Image (cartoon, rainbow, N blue to C red):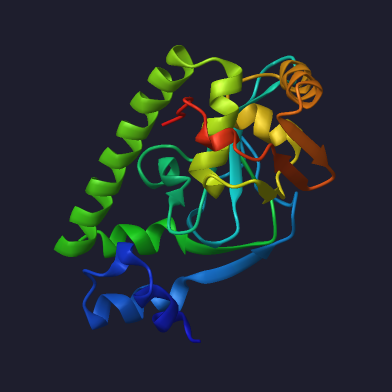
Length: 219
């Protein structure tokens, strides 16, 4: 599949006319990432912004004492690193693939030319508002739910209500994604295991049959 066909499959570019699509395809490229491979580091010069085609990517910031705080897990169809498009010349966070992934890389100068297209500009503004809503919801989520609730909500959001999961993310990454530290998450997993609610071996997580039928809803 050529680059133009790839771009046409991404909702974000639905508003592009053929001329703009051709110009963008000439400068865009696809990067394949192995699990745990870094796409960019916090503080690195920001030349590209990205749209995830497949897999998943964790975006996080690192504190002065070396602790990592996950900002977001990126899933296919989502864009990220848009901060370098307007003003910032460096990436304000680090992005690491959490599984085998493909990323569409778009040079910021090509994007600035593309944004002159009304359809693309409207799509981008709409997507930015979606991100703002996500951040607002994330604050509410962290303040309103304990770690156990956030863990099961994470499972539902990313995999649905199942009784057997194949999870490529590390426990450390999941802890970060639900807003806690690895030590607290490990204690939670140990407690849920002792209670017979879950069994977790390597990448396979089993949830007790009937668990989702209880009067406990994680929405």
